[in-house]
Length: 256
Image (cartoon, rainbow, N blue to C red):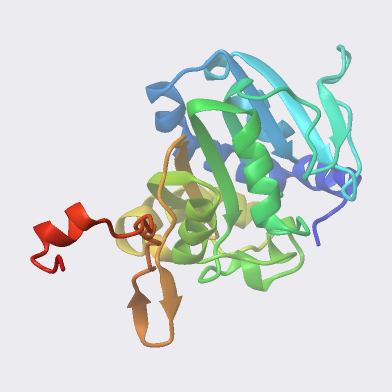
């Protein structure tokens, strides 16, 4: 399960939450600048990140799963956040250039079904940005932050999930290398932790960041067994059955 939207809003309003949003967006910023878009949808709780990335994301909209609740955004402006069912998004086919997921995959009931619905509303070759807790990181082991709730992922698990929904992972990185502590000392040391972690122990970051691309035509992956990979059988149509004639028997040398 995920935090409720009101709890997430309260946590991101703390100094720790604001610093987390800044560090995650610092890692994502080069990807956003590489592929600017006209229309972006954020699913889950993405408001703190969309505020920092508004210059590269065009028109911004949000969708919050019904079980999470909703927190209106932006403040003192027309609301752009909708309360939705993850398996039935209220948007037309091939509508968004980019979709951003945060606090979503780790808590949604059926991730494969939700990702196929996301695939439906994304334009061909659209980009999917995913922020999810890292199974190997410290943040997934402490439930004092939102990243300690729900199911964390390893990089391989995340890639398998995306590929099963017809997305191709393009690049990965990590963020949140500082331990999930609180206080002024943590804020002062967080930048140094981030710089050191990216260089020396990137796999230990608290969250995995992944950019994937929607593919329209793709083959299914092979069936994986305990002994490795097994190729899938390809059905071959049978030849049409026709009665043998005297002319056919002559060609075969079996005419009477």
